Length: 173
View 1 (cartoon, helix red, strand yellow):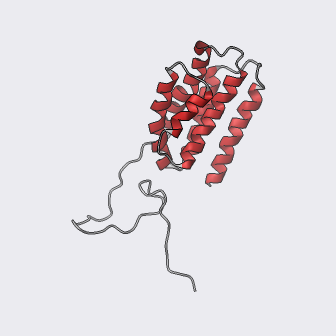
View 2: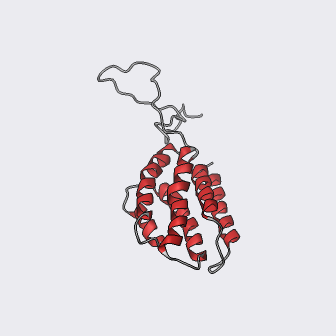
View 3: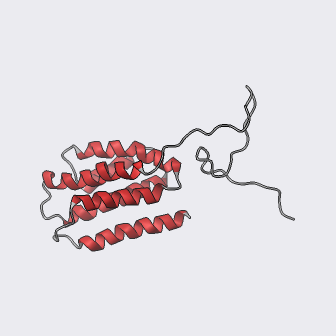
């Protein structure tokens, strides 16, 4: 299931790259990149609440870098290098950096005023909108009350609090 999400997200980024063309050709409007970032993030995080939480931590950091003066793709990519995140979260973030890189390379004018509009579209607006489509995790009610000192030994498959739970059963003869 996850592989399909990655394939769709990579296809979306590739489609954006083909639509915008090579360096020197005028890129599409920033709103297009915001919508692309939002869709890519939403598709990638639909079934991964742990990764969504990490992306929620990265979004304000990336958006704060946009207010600075160094808006080259490498500076925005460095945001993820400074955070302890899963490799899957890093891959999703790198897809967004790739989307921004497509716009950056297609811009003829790389002045801070022009580039900032595209960076804000991807890392502020696009990420924020994509994360809004993923509900924050909620605590689930326990099926039985746990007494002090009692150990909880099982997680329910599909439980957002235990996303990597595995289903164990009796061995087959």
